[in-house]
Length: 398
Image (tube, rainbow, N blue to C red; front, side):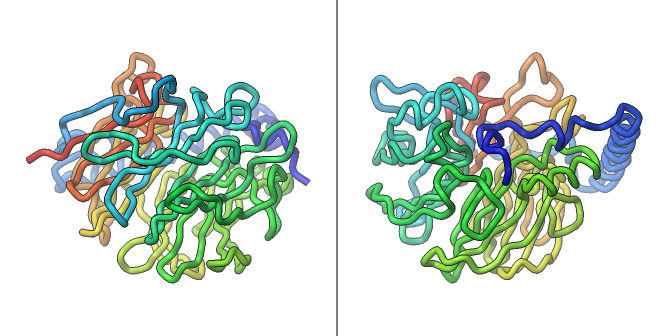
């Protein structure tokens, strides 16, 4: 059984630190060489497209007006970090959460178990005023969020509490905040059909089936030995498919780098063709599958992706929140925009500039686009201190 400590953002040393110095050095050299070769390849490939996909230089920014600290919280509340945001398809308003005042992931300090205020918010997309607020006392660390076609709100509860009674689940709420369904076993991480282990995101497919991206640890595993040790420890990197009533159907994926395997499947989205897109953050790619898990194709132009949103006009917006000197060097954080059917970028919205990440900056983890083309970023643990609040709105230009 996996160690319950994994559920509060602790990856076991055996998974990525217990490597001899020689093997680790060689692995890092190979990774650095691969990064350099990939970077040179991409710079060459985009020379005729008007910009550099790594830095974003040369691409137009269609959303230059920035409103930070967007969204009005109730009196006495302050923004914790977040990682999830979506648009309610029934009315076009913004649905997000904040981690009950936690500046980071939660865990032993502040989280939604220790501070059981209502973490889920629905905001008027025009004014930022709160329309609805619910979900208190149910979760520990909300992560991914999705609003289905009926306005139901789905939230992945990433971490477990110390008592082992909450977390490692996905919850479905009615538009009014009533808890309708929970997937996984409360507080008990695992890799079987009745358990989840650090679920990152959830989405409802075109036919009502439910898909969960499960497993957060793989992004820090830098060689084959670490990945194998993670698999042996029962850590997950999979997509789990359920029927509309929550009955387990199938799953695919494990810790790895082959197509169909993942190093932290961080976000999910469906396109107009009914294909499932997975933001495979640790492998720096978007993986595309049919609804039964058969691999179709990939995208490599979007960076170290934390969140993804596909608009009705088949444009992909993917946000890179984590590229930095130690992870995905040279890539600049921000929102990359491109057409659904091609692996290329047509626009770039830069994130916030910081002294410690001056060349690469920092950006949110979740991304959503409203009917007017305004882009919203959900600021995660890395970007929230710079952003000042939990949500940033990038206003579409005329």
